[in-house]
Image (cartoon, rainbow, N blue to C red):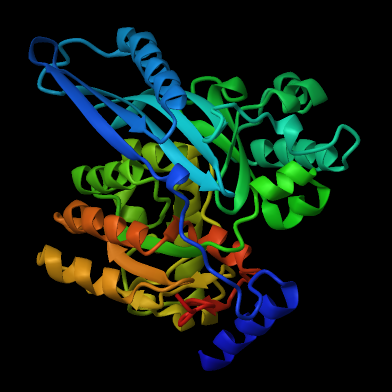
Length: 441
């Protein structure tokens, strides 16, 4: 493990992603925000509506987002099932928020309806704001008209959207239309601390699918092709970043409460899902995927014993098939149960294996303050933090942790964002913890 850490640091220094002695800066006040939840239950119709309104430093942006969320609520409400017996249908409208550069914020606003453990409706809006002026950024502002980036983006759109739902073929004419230059320049997108994401409704290409599709392009590949403004907007080299990860879910209400807490604080995270939990958590999986959280494998069965090549092949195929059927994608990396990566590597799992550098010790632990203190006090730049969304009080300590991490100026990103940002490739059959374990404050 020491040799791996040393190698990671060498790669960082060579790439220039994390220069020695690099100054770290606080998150600017203009990128700070709060979110206000408003809920209403309609008991006679067994309906529940939750709206979450961002409040930022820019009142113009606040007003536009509030109007957007209200309009999306009005559009979606007719699709809420009425009087569905004892089952309550839920409409949730709110923004996943990403921050980048010194004054830019992205808002991926999603309206979704869940009923009987399934997601039955989804719509979205994506926009990027300059939080000083209140103006919106277009994709054409990031790339010159003659930039080779447009061909790269078109190819990524074609490949990644075709890769959704492996047993189905996309509408070829619709896909070609999405790859046209005009469509790309007007595509809905967001900017996270580490990547550009384009967003689409899945039913644009796959009729009947009630999820979103995301096309991911990391800044590490795009920045040389950007305009000066694009490079400025995507320069996050002076920010500290951390990856929060959750094992053993999904867990219905428990995971949902964690997702809501993460959304309120603009924190991204990675969920290592147990395959046997997927069947009863379809709507949770859709929420995770649509909001841009990373969904990774915690193996199909949560077992530590008798790991064989035959079993690993069977588990992986079953996991991929069931996850793909719900959200259209398969996991790109894995965490072995108990962090016992060596057994899976020996059995030929052929995936990057992600362990952790900071353990919250929250497994079965209901002491909210103790867990919150363990993470908040020890979190450092580049850490991968182990937590569990199966814990019934996880939403309570995650609220405290997120407030404290914000105060420590740590941006919460996914595992793949963290490693790409720091220039560390995630290779199959290699085990990773953190590349910046004791980075300076």
